[in-house]
Amino acid sequence: MTPLADLVTRTCDSAGAVAAVRAATADGAAAIAGVLVEAGADRRLLPGALEYAGVTATATPLELAAIAGALEVLVASQRTGQPSLVLTVPEFLTGAYARFLADHPAVHARRTSAVLAEVAAGAEGRLLVAAPYLTGVALERLVPHAGRVLTDGGTVCVITRALTGRSPEPSPANIAAVGALRRVTQSRPGRLLVRSWEGPGLGVHLKAVIADRDDAYLGSANMTDGGHRGHAEAGVRLPAAIAGPLADWLEMLAGALTEVP
Figure 1 (cartoon, rainbow, N blue to C red):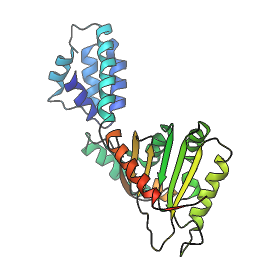
Figure 2: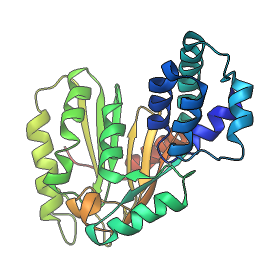
Figure 3: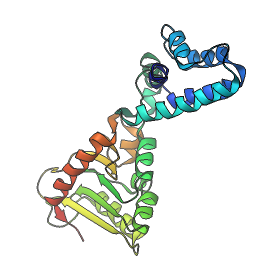
Figure 4: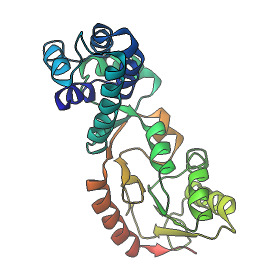
């Protein structure tokens, strides 16, 4: 089964490929092979991988359904353990993005706004957001998830810059965005921590969203509408093996910054 899962994981939409396999089980092995070719699986390796997995002309629909279920579990497991590309694609790059996906079917590239929402949605006990530039419009997409974490007694930590008069150049946009977050999440039983660089220069320039040390985004996109949609940005979605150490580093960073009550 593993060789087939490897091929499916390398397609540009592995979840879609698995769903297509499930839908094709009633029509037999040939139909499954056809949907995997359409999904972009390597034609040279596919026949051997299908045979090894038991997807043969003699397999019954019930057997094929069981194989599809096992394939779904394996593909999900493989994807969970791999970093993947996260891209902000402004309108002028739409065509280039389509060509990129076609040229690199093994690369799992997805849009920034969707990935950030997914990462935040997975947070249960702790959600960490770090960016030097914040706007209310972009931060609003994370607010429901922050509110849920706080309602459940968890912690939300925001790391940014220039929030007080101690900064040489306070940022009105950052101040407004954090204020809006406070208003929406106030009176929740959890804890909202805001840490800020108040010295000269940017001080904090990384951009990250981390959920419970299990899932993370790290990249160039600020928590602004431009970062999510309007600018060409690139980052990675990190599995737990990397998200955990990154969370530790950002906790150390937060401890070195000014707490803004």
